[in-house]
Amino acid sequence: MASPGHNLLILLLFFMSFPCSKSRLSVDYYNKTCPQFASIIEQIVSDKQIASPTTAAGVLRLFFHDCMVEGCDGSLLITSTSFNKAERDADIDQSIPGDAYDLVTRAKTALELQCPGIVSCADILATAARNLVTMVGGPYYHVRLGRKDGLVSNASLVQGNIAQPTMPLSDIISLFYSKGFSVQEMVALVGAHTIGFSHCKEFSNRLFNFSKTSETDPAYNPKYAEGLRKLCANYTKDPTMSAYNDVMTPGKFDNMYYKNLQRGLGLLSTDQALSVDRRTKPFVDLYAANETAFFEAFAHGMEKVSIYKIKTGKKGEVRHRCDQFNAA
Ligand code: HEM
Ligand SMILES: *[C@@H]1O[C@H](CO)[C@@H](O)[C@H](O)[C@H]1NC(C)=O
Ligand SMILES: *[C@@H]1O[C@H](CO)[C@@H](O)[C@H](O)[C@H]1NC(C)=O
Ligand SMILES: *[C@@H]1O[C@H](CO)[C@@H](O)[C@H](O)[C@H]1NC(C)=O
Ligand SMILES: *[C@@H]1O[C@H](CO)[C@@H](O)[C@H](O)[C@H]1NC(C)=O
Ligand SMILES: *[C@@H]1O[C@H](CO)[C@@H](O)[C@H](O)[C@H]1NC(C)=O
View 1 (cartoon, helix red, strand yellow):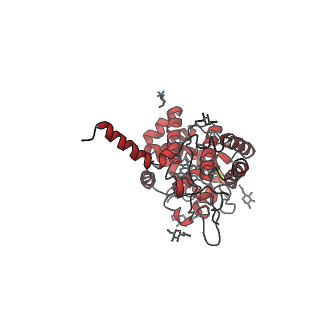
View 2 (cartoon, helix red, strand yellow):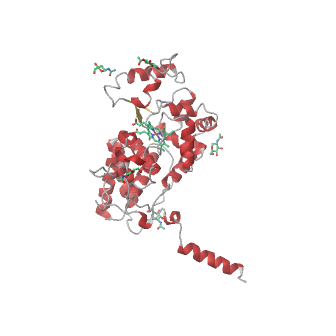
View 3 (cartoon, protein in one colour):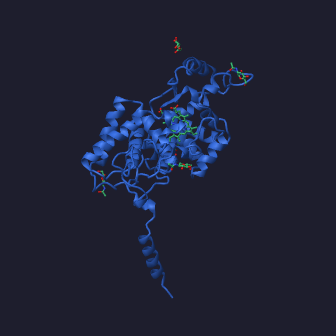
């Protein structure tokens, strides 16, 4: 008969020989191998954000989309070749701004000079997204490190993994649920739309010829709809035309997004739906009333996004360049 102490020892040995992949990520992963990791990223991120204030939103969206397809593994940073149409050339990702990719390139270049071959592009992206959220007024959260960069980047894997504003809310809920995110976590994460832009084509169906009875979507505040119609009047001729996601405080990470939804100032159809649907409205009302509750939920949600399907050990590599596989 084995004693309880004996069983414990066996259990311990078992966990020591098969460490689960999550346990290999840690906040001090680069402390010995690249002690300047945090300060280099911090410097590059703040220089870039000051020079190009649209960077924060671009990087946050880039990071989220990277994570939702093949996990947080830098697959979205790879450029296409004549043999491979990469993830970033999928339709949905075309609108991610060049400044977002540029930030990763700058950080990678600086890090390769100090600690060549050590820091993964996936870790750079996760850390930059966190720093930028904090820099524009949002919460701080811990980013554990040690992700490897992925070995696959395929445009045809994007559709079905990224929510689109034309999708019914039930489909959005199912999509997040299939990736392990609750309705409440989804509502908190979409609060990222407190910063950044959307191109007119993403919501033009709500502005022009909306239905037989109404030219614009009646869910819009009428003055807001009128303003957007003017802004987007030329959008087919000029596809760069875009509107702030948060019309009240566009560059500040706050809970204004949810307050806007309560007043018909939600830009995308899916934004507005959150404040109407009985499954999501309670959380919109909570986050509109209590910014602390939103920040806690967003931080927690982002920590969860940041470890979604991450690769460690031999399941990936540390790329030399973020836009190319090492084998290329
Ligand atoms: C219901 C789910 C979601 C839908 C349907 C959605 C859809 C969109 C669309 C259509 C845009 C406009 C892109 C453009 O025209 O350039 C956008 C922008 C953005 N999204 Fe989402 N999104 C969702 C959830 C999220 C989540 C969970 C995050 C991050 C945690 C996020 C972060 C952003 C950011 C930061 C922008 C602004 C990008 C910029 O200014 O370049 N979104 N989203
Ligand atoms: C790792 O580095 C960070 C930042 O320099 C520091 O705050 C932390 O205490 C270090 N951790 C260890 C275990 O040395
Ligand atoms: C990309 O994914 C599609 C669909 O799964 C597959 O048919 C195709 O072979 C993949 N392309 C590459 C280069 O792996
Ligand atoms: C508006 O939509 C209807 C169908 O919903 C279509 O028959 C009509 O041609 C559209 N009008 C314009 C101006 O696009
Ligand atoms: C729309 O485009 C036309 C021709 O390109 C231009 O004359 C007009 O000023 C534009 N209007 C707006 C609101 O941008
Ligand atoms: C707001 O939310 C925080 C965090 O959940 C909570 O501690 C606090 O009591 C809430 N404040 C109010 C006024 O309900």
